[in-house]
Image (cartoon, rainbow, N blue to C red; front, side, top):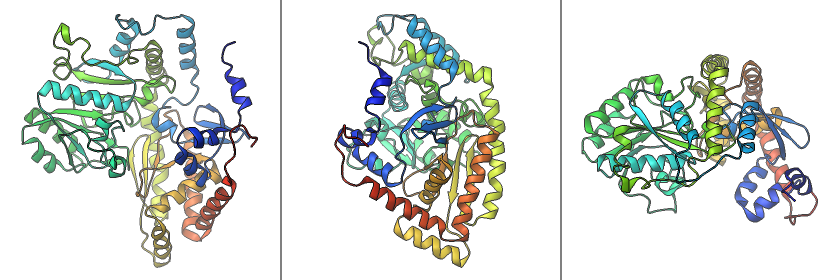
Length: 469
């Protein structure tokens, strides 16, 4: 008898958090319960999630950017069902299947003419690892430079390029030969590259942790410096690529031509993990320089047929639905609707980002009464205020957001790229409501405390797996 998904979900309904606590990551289960995010989601469609009580939640995380086309996109589902029914000869390995070639063709057609090669893998972290290997082989150099606050993945090589010390703590020694420079500081980068031993500069065009933007003129200067010193410029587009900023790739806003571009997340359509490394001939071919080196860098699942179908169906939907153009339009509208809140509320200092990657930056207010309240909140824990915005957005308005990084008063939005006027209006009105409470009384503070207390009481004693909820 084949595995019955519906039956398994029904028979073990409600055991989600207990199973995670017992067998997976218990701290994740604790965190979600502490802030009252312990919902039992049963369905996802478009920009929304639905729980076991039938409540609808506006998902402004989109799986950390995976669900660019929203959840359960019908064209993607149809393509994958068709591929499964065709019994395609998958992962023959000693073969050059057609679909990887078609997806590679589609990707290189969307970037600058110098990009001619593609390597497929399984994730963004693996794409970054591959970029480091290609860069070292191509240049014959060892050093890799990255930026503070960077996030490129959590495997050990990618972790060596992570600008967040909390992620790195306890996992060293990491990949040798890496150096950190301040994001946006062209002089510090120039000083590193002048040494003549840097294989690659790896950077996100817009940093995901904090939604940080570099100063005007930075990226053209980066590209010129890398060319002058023989360093490969690696643009990590895993999160900000594929339309999220209103261009297909974020680096295209500045007219630069990276040597390597890493892609993942949205390319999967949310169904089959896939990553890609887009390379120039110079960056790619030294790795595969002879017959003996044909398999020197590979990955078992990298060119699997279902991932290729998901990628091809995703790109076709992008074109047919005009996704990049709609993000450009609706991203501008979202920024326009949020701008008055900066003037209205002292604690909201800025809106930063591009298109549909947005950071709401909170900071110390100027008036004495609000400053005292702010100081009291921040004295309990650094950047607690941003968490006090995320929690009522979820509980009052059923909107899923996140704090952009630990110890940082920035709330991050990564809406599905199909979000439109309805979603924008709903979110802006909800944020207005939450910030009004924060500025005009102690309601937000008490609501946050009540949520923590209720969640703590609800957790209670551990419940054996299999026991009723």
